[in-house]
Amino acid sequence: MKPDRLDRDIQFRSLTPEQREQLMIQVAKRYYHLDMTMSDLSLELGLTRWQARRLLTEAKETGLVRIEIVPHTPRLPGLESRFEAAFGIKEAVIVPSTGDQDSALVLDSVARAAGQYLSGLGKIPAIGISWGRTMTAVARRLPPYWNEGVEVVLLNGSMNVRYSGPQTNNVAELFASAGKGIATLLPVPAVFGHASTKQALEHDPTIAAVLDFAARVPVICFGIGAMVQDSVLIQSGYVSLQQHELLKRNGAVGDILSRYIDAEGNIVDPELNARTIGISLESCRSRVLSIGIAAGLEKRDAVLSCLRAKYVNVVITDEATALAVMGSRVLSR
Image (cartoon, rainbow, N blue to C red; front, side, top):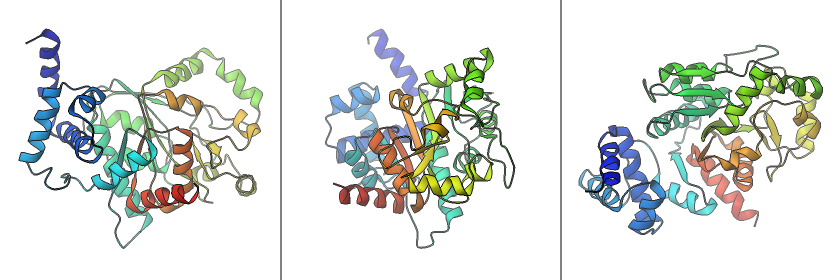
């Protein structure tokens, strides 16, 4: 056995059950739903062909694959594969919707799936995250020791101007605590009153170092926000209801990383964007994994915008939202 083959086999045998199941799902979807060859899917997933065949065999032996892919967690692999093919992304994680579309239950279901997905990625040294309700829900669903020793960095400013509900700006600390790692914070407001203030802080050595780290981390994860009046940007005091309505009239369909975008992923208000601190949206396109999380039908247009602009290459959402996004794509052709 060649040395490099031996090294990869050692890593392969050290996978946790959750990580192994994630790999089995990815191999099976590519082989059965996307008609990829064993050689191509092995290359894409960083496996040897022997490892890929072994995972596929194990998937069938354990009942994970029968006539269709049947994961042991509540997911919809068939719809996931269609979604991935429709938008050309690396991965979709879609949880079933029920008749009762209570928003809190939908968010919890999506957050639980996101926590499982992140814990199944294996040992990643660092991850960049946003803050807000969605990411807070994900943080609370991360398994203990989900990625031991991970370094978590905030991608955008998080200090609130005012407080009007459950805390949503301590997500990095929650992620790091669950992984027994450390958090690198960006202890400044998300939006400043003047662009010159933001520019001056960006040149501060401490803030500049955090922004540089956030710009380079290969895996990022963020919530996708809708144009609703109880958004965290409004509740945190950054945007007034009047500004919110003006943004909608000017074409805003949602926000990511505290930046408002239109249907094509373009910045809606350049002046507001100039006062917003954090990574650029363009930098999302260069990450190994750029994971967007959205729960609820009101997120449909914002998710579709992120996909069009290629800000995400992994989407985690619910069945109803995924179907609505796919339906909107067909209608917009």
